[in-house]
Image (tube, one colour):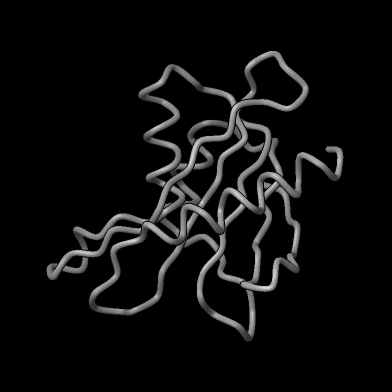
Amino acid sequence: MNSNVVERLIGECHSAKTRAYSPYSKVRVGAALLCEDGTEDGTIIQGCSVENAVYPLSWCAERSAIVAAVSRGFRKFKAIAITSDMIEKPITPCGACRQVMAEFGTDYDVYMVKPDSTYTKVWM
């Protein structure tokens, strides 16, 4: 994937993080999902974490982005970028998010991004 698209994806996940609702953990998480839409640059769909006082009902940023993309008709993804407020290390998808991501394929890149935009790239 070209570096301009990666930079755009990282910028979009930071933007999504600003809309997170995290009154309990105080950890905001944002995700940006690059959809396969027949163009080189692709469509990017954002998602953010939404916490609930009943913790199991909280919604992760990755799943928020995937649900938003599916509701717009997308089913294939090229990459996802995830970021949080954690400085020491990048956030990783939880087990539930990994399962939802796998439901839509296992052939896309996962960028785990720190607040300073440095990242670790893995494959789904």
